Image 1 (cartoon, rainbow, N blue to C red):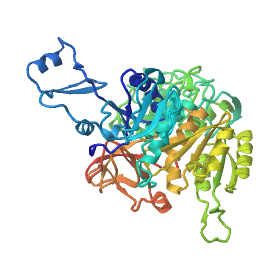
Image 2: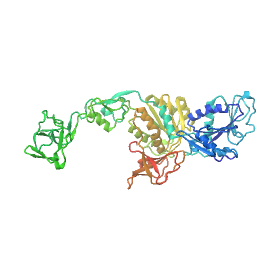
Image 3: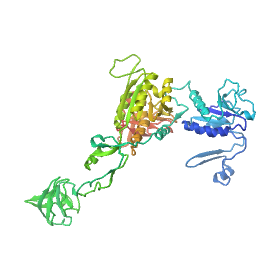
Image 4: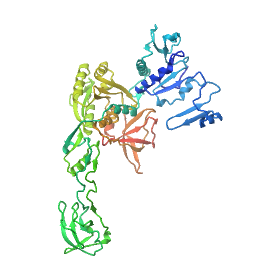
Length: 588
């Protein structure tokens, strides 16, 4: 049978009735989903069935003669098709699946058709073996010891069966796999980020820091205003202060001048005014300021030209506590301190604040082919760019750095490096071979020291991402290609760091723009193209790429001011399509 309608790995379960296929699938599917595999299921029923309910509108319309009934709600939709002439084939059924939403198709039934299957057998049922006749069986899950060259799994060990299926999926497209190939076990960007954030803890250790040390830090306690801002009712401009119940007079007698930092301790009487400067406190009973451009002074007698502006009671005066009242919340817990926040704290007279301890991050590069900048170039080697881009991005986030340099490809060197890192850092980041995990010793060291998962994330650029814990310290293994390092950092590492720092209010900036060129993509994959956005002649935001988009082309990243995100639901962004733009100015 030619199952041409399925581009995904397809795996069935062959067994006699009573073996427990459905029971096994009930516990197997959650294990696979937990490993990041999206499942599509096809089940064959030998008996008559109806998923609809008598009395429901859809049921009544089908019975009225609709041969196809498509019903949809907020959370799901279902297509019911009447097939009285002949049963729909497996190939036809596969063609009706949305294969962009799955990584693996599991099949229960159709055991006589030609596609890969795992045979299930329980000794107590005394049923004959199926693999002697069915050459499509790739493994046997049973509770006995059959004589066969096929892999034999314990039918009661669901974890072992899950691991076998994932390994089989990895090898399913091995002959055609490339760095950009869709892997059958790929996670979506959103799913990968969610898994990471769920594994990351928020900070708990706080310390009191001076203003000079607060930049980039995150508040561990809310800041409460100790004074009013402004501290007194004051003038919003240079001019003349009068009483609001005395605005209709033709002229006023100038009795004093009040400069910022000084005051006038007497009350203003009717017919009097004071010359006042911006920020100076208005005298008692004075509550209206006329700008000096409207005033004319003749030997201390002040008149105002109302043709240049009407006089309104209370104008040009800032009330005490207008910006902030004493006792009010200035900044909430979880606020990151930038330049504006520092200025506000200083304006309140605060010399320090309670913040979470700055995050200490250890970084290193791996690979015998990587050499330090400044050294004489060696044949077949590349200079280490990744560590310096990581240093810059981590500094931008206010992290303290522990730079461990370039680590040679050996088990001893990696073990020593990681041991040192987890003793002294809150987070460990590597770039290069450790993220790919191709070398056995790397996987061995990481498995000995912690629990690390190697994920294929469905994005471009981006290659396998390693994430987990080395004892209690989070670990990221990033790709080796420089652009892929930066994009995966922005998508996965930065959100994790911000959560570890206690930054509660950050959201990555996302804009919408019109594409000025065709942006290549692939259904089911998140595409991140380096781009340049600007405002066009018509006032609309426009975006174009920076040119060649190879993962190792750093020039395309240095020329970019944004990433152009094409979602997995879009096959390709055409000229004139609206795309999502992620600005880079504040993040690189």
